[in-house]
Image (tube, rainbow, N blue to C red; front, top):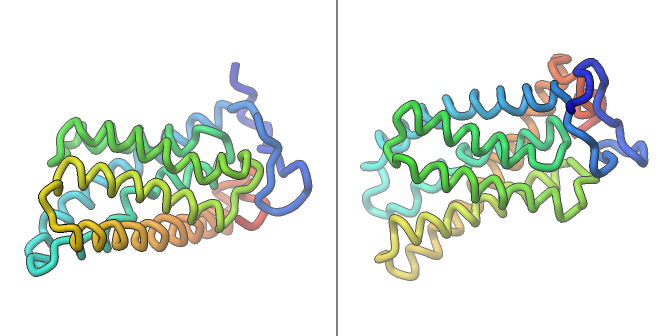
Length: 210
């Protein structure tokens, strides 16, 4: 059973900013906020899908370059763990965002659910590597990089298997850079901005520097 929503998240076993005790149970507020983040990012995904389609012709000369926009699709996997600091938050939020995107009419259809699942799992690895004890910028960037790598591999298998090796390498590099900047650095900046507003006061992320 989830713990009462009024109970604040752990501030950490060591007292250091970004550190938490592993194995913390999910509270009602954790579940609700993670779901809300997933829905909000799902709506953003839908809009970003339209922008991706509209700007495709601008990258005709070198299609892999469009991957500079990619990082937005990995934001839930990075941001949710930074906010609630619970194992599984990135997977939960990324999958919810994919479901919302699909329901709103994603151009890629139901395959986005597979993307959401695998990107979420890959993003979790960035925090799991530190046993879910640290939730700071290095962990966010690593999470974004791993999620982006998973997305790039899926894209090359599903959509671009006939590309030349140079294009494939360029694409992976562009996705990695975009996800580390937009999802890793951008996601961290977003959580810090939310923390300053007091919106995260129920979480350890709202009382310590991310």
